[in-house]
Image (cartoon, rainbow over all chains, first blue to last red; front, side, top):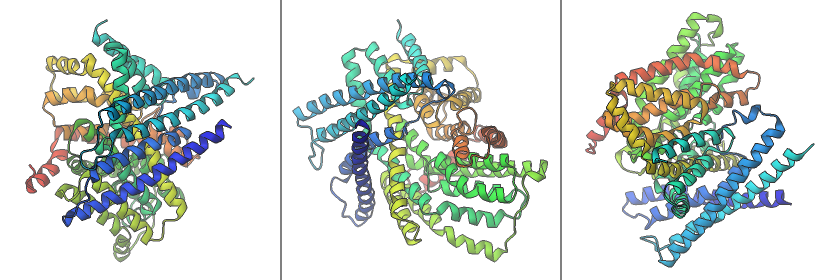
Length: 159
Length: 439
């Protein structure tokens, strides 16, 4: 069940990240040429910055699903599988706490931005929206980490 | 406890956490957050963690990473590497060791459209290794050439390491890219020299391949014309100020996609793979930056980087000796930690020292890339060696590490040349930018 939900959530985020990436690529390219003929797209830097944030944040769950973050496996590779699984449970739990704190504190930060009505300079996009999207991505990342931790626990307690 | 002791404890704690296999980015953020909370207050720690993460993700300068990565992915899926290899093969095939030399040249060429060392190594492993095996090359030399040549991907612009370094040090990415060209050519020449020497000493390791007429050689050049055009447009546009670095990435990605499409190389599956791999590598890089930013704030509050810079300045060692010591740190560190993570971690520490010694940031950036290039082929972590071994499982890891040894020597020679003649990195950007009136 948790496996299926995790896969679906990470896939949804991946699709959103991919779409944002393609829009960002086309927009930067288009603006480079339009600016050359003195018709730049207004607020393109803001849009691209926010799209970039979405691309990278929405990729977090998918990257964790494929264990794509760089790690040093020098020691753990040489350990017996059970001991390695126990260490994995601990590191997954620590990562889970870290990401949950980022999502929680990020949300509080977004609330503060919303209270002072902070907006982007040219297009007036509320800046808290992007921060909230980043928080959602970290929350989804927590789900993936939880799933990986559960499977590591299962490996650690298996006879 | 004094701030410096807390800082040192934090550094050792982080290295300890690395060994548990926890992702390096998370480890840096976790230790940085705890350390900052300890030094300032728990509330301040929570705020720094959230704001560093949110602001790093919204950094316009870093948006360039997914765009240049996408450009490289489209080149990869569009078969550019295969065509580059074919051309280089035609020019050097008849020379003993020519196929290995062709691999190195193709790596440099592919590096011109792809900023990743491991992607370049993986690509050339699928293209170059089977050919070298077909001609009965020594597996050590063949795999060593691919793993080492892959490192050229991060020296030849566009380079992800240089982009990240530029963002960390607030140095012009355009200048850094231009600065990478001459050293990349120097290392290419040194690698080819290393292959030549191996072939002289062990002729059976690298037999000569088939030879081609000059008309066949020049005819093959047509196949890579688009790579040269894309490289010139992207780098030229960036240097001339037609595009910002981000726009150059966007233009490069679109152009590479058009090339792949025009050559009929892009299917839905390949397009999907290009996008997915771009998202993954960009996210991994970005998390490393974000983790390093949090850890960097912790280090800054302990004042360790500045005290270290003062201490090194008071030693009154000659500048080259300090650079060699820093080089040793990278060489040893690169054996344990991923190259990019090492750059993130150490640049905030070493930059004040380099500044005090009077070396430019541009030069240091190129030297760092050279050092990290060594890290990807040295045991036990040597990322590129694992990449090549993952693609051709018939070659043992030890064999690849052994095969990479002549290239490691070539890199050391290259580094010494760079220390003796810093102009190799700084001359081209100085000339180009002053001729454009950007001094």
